[in-house]
Length: 377
Image (cartoon, rainbow, N blue to C red; front, top):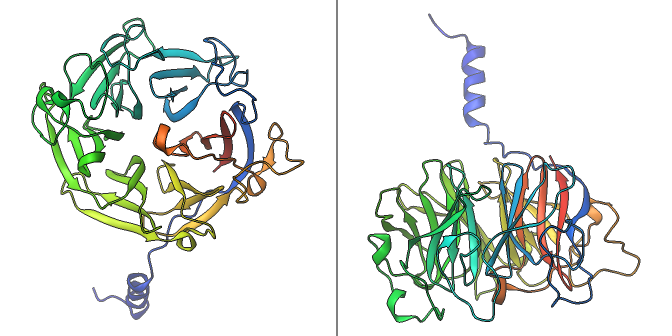
């Protein structure tokens, strides 16, 4: 049967039409969700069992959702969480403890210790994988919210690491293979795919690597990465995305195909390319399952996989709150002031992001740490 001229014309029009980028979510209201950016004493420590907004605030860093539970790294050596489904959510220590000396050891969660956790990811079985940059290893927390909670080393170390240093001779270098014999150089930023394979950035070796699901936890190199300081990594539609800044005052977003190792530059440029007018300051990465959230100097940006960028929250105020701004009151997303002190040297990134159930969670630090929740759908 011959096709009509109209049908042929419509087919040609559709074939020639440009690919439409997914629309950015509409962010409406932001509010202080946890912590206190203006608390006077950063040296004070939060107590197990206190409320999300109680003071002294918890030292939030990375944010990870495991169902209704929000998990965070705290000052490097600790993991905490809060069950947001509870009638009154409180903060609970999960594993690790800050001490007089940094050490890294596996075992029951109450007894386990970390050096400086610099990335966590949820695995398909509900376990939590993480990178300990200071101890130079990868670990997994099994049954994280249950009675059998336990920490085990996956790669880079098989025994406790004391004292900790990226220069420790027995676990630093660049060697793939069984996890027990793998040599790393400052692992960062962990992500996982649906098959349970764990990916991480081996920062000192400037490589993306993976840990296979075999009994030996085999480590293998996936790709070599461009020069830059990397500040997060997430998985989206079977691909990996990572955000970075470099010494040429450029920010860039990369897409890595974990199967082929192909690296695609989604976006690269100086501040103006990222809708800013100040020095490049990209930090944080999260996904709503369609596109990616990141931040640049007090603004939240939404970036599509084809490189379209839109500012969706924050008014660019980030050095301190302006007079009259009440951080404890909700504000329209476009009017939010997102105070963000530098902390890459201690936390690995200035801003940490997570997205869950129509809300973007932004972890930053003013005088002390806080989390802003922004409705974005």
